[in-house]
Image (cartoon, rainbow, N blue to C red; front, side, top):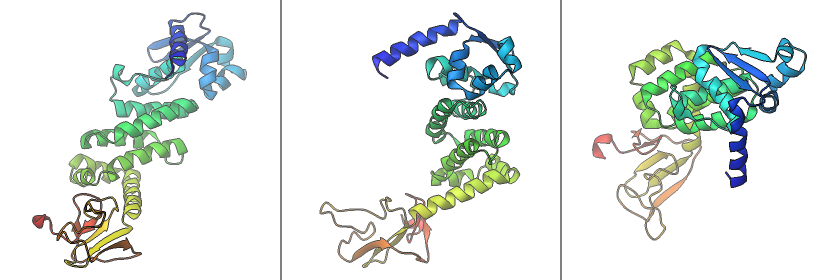
Length: 277
């Protein structure tokens, strides 16, 4: 952020004190004295409520009727109006869940820029959550979103890919009782995991490495070290027998390797039993 922009945001944020405010926003037990022009600038929902002759345009009072579980998200939305951001560390809600809730609220109140910020923040933080925390977040999102809404569908996809993009974590999650109970009770989430996992596998399982000397084979990601180990000379080297000449690497439409075992380094398979690694 440039110095001029930082100064602008700092000056704008000073208006949160209520100076020259002309709109009162109520939610639960909290109230904010805000400015109609600023709210309308960020949110088409507020713009419509305050300009098309509804009761709020006369009373200049808006009472939001969302569930109290969105308290931190509503506060973050007001913060965004004046600071072009929000501080997750000041909220009781966990950071990944807060970003998801802000995205849902931003979509409801048609605040596109806030939704973009929340979606990106959620995508960055959901990737690192522990399995039990993921189950809590996934439960909330699937209980409070619908697949038919594009903005909701994006958040749901991020929840699924947070697991399917981490194969080892995903395998552990499928042995977690909380996750299994969740999948048994939520067909949409189970379907999302299945479809995203299959899409990821199709994206990475296009490459097959085979050694002409020891017949070692790897079927999986082209970026896996078991598929693309290179010598200092730039030639492809078999990770099992270390041979350089005679190895071949390419793409095939179909390839069956029997017996095949999960590769510990990617979401693919290779021909070495786990006990021999």
